[in-house]
Image: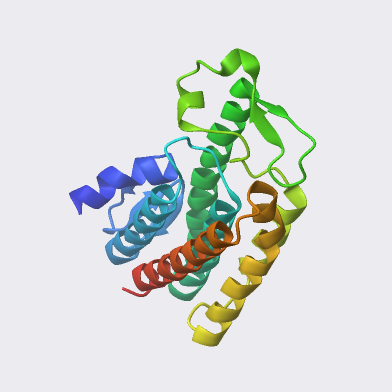
Length: 218
């Protein structure tokens, strides 16, 4: 249990307080030891999975926004099934805070070394003054998702899917691929490279969904 308690501050932004009735309180919300241990495990696993798909540059592509919403969906369903409303709100807040921080890092890099272009889907390029920046050496032009409408549609696409339904999973992955094809074609007209990218996305999303669901069902 000590390991769980040590993880709480990093996940929730506040230490857990052990109460006299052997429950644990986080910001006024009580958890039993079992509830807290499982919630921490789900959050740690989910955040680790998200981080594994963010590249060294810390910049976000469209598939990262899919991962974000898959995580929100799975964690919300887990919490509503296993926790009360107050606990659910706290767990969802912790996950959203983690995702918000990833977005903030992305935004700060954009502000520092990129400038807007006229491209519809990957509308940023490294500025001339930032070409020697350490981050610029691990990025390149057209690697940054910039179309907010597409990001919003991807978020909506994954927000209410039942990931325990294999047919629904196959459909949502195919729908995602159709959504991003115009964006990917802005980067490359090479059919083979496009198919490779779409195949990678299909495998990545399928693996991510399985990993999230498995962690939430342990």
